[in-house]
Image 1: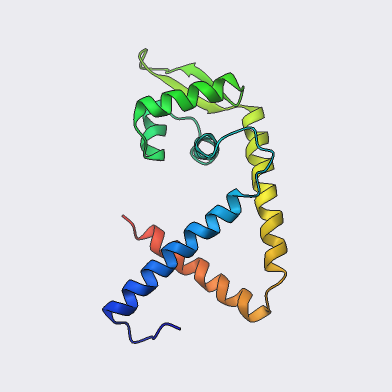
Image 2: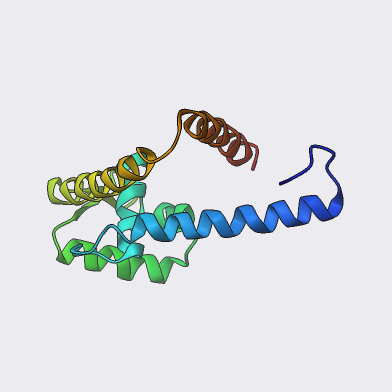
Length: 149
């Protein structure tokens, strides 16, 4: 489909096709959350706290690439749901530290299990060669992401 002799038009087509495939794939993964009590924005913030640990609202906003006032609203809604806790910052009285609660961890775990179950079912439909190709693609995508700098 794509020539190994890369040209500008091939690069452009591959870039567009890859971006569209990634967006569609992410949409399908998100579609597994039919009974979720949180929005995608809230889920993303919970995942950030799960992977990065406790953060200030400013750090979480930067991590999620949103404006601080937007993140303040997300944190307030997550706190109201009991999914995060807010504690005073140990050295800066103007700040708080946001942490994932046990219930927030439960939400993250349930979401991940639903996505993985769907994905395992889809992977079971592939041939061994397709699985190998997909494994190589994952490695390449991780390389592209880590090279973001």
